[in-house]
Length: 95
Image 1 (cartoon, rainbow, N blue to C red):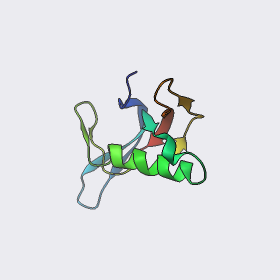
Image 2 (image 1 turned 180 degrees about the vertical axis):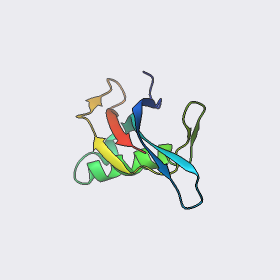
Image 3 (image 1 turned 45 degrees about the vertical axis):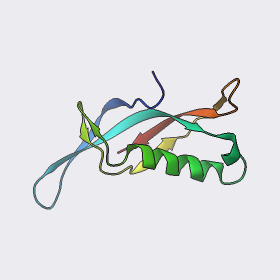
């Protein structure tokens, strides 16, 4: 898996909106990178905001548009990259 590549674990629910349009609630995964200046208090909140900025409003050829991140199920522990000091987090979320 490369950084920034979302993978679907499976379709959870099919929802019909007010106008009868179909929405799928998916479990997705993504690698999110955080620079060291964001480490410390508030890091998880910053990490969650970064995930939302990266995925909401994007389009996947396989799954269509990601309208909204509805829940972050796992933020991972994070791994520091040698040489850059940045940390990568394997995040799992619903959208």
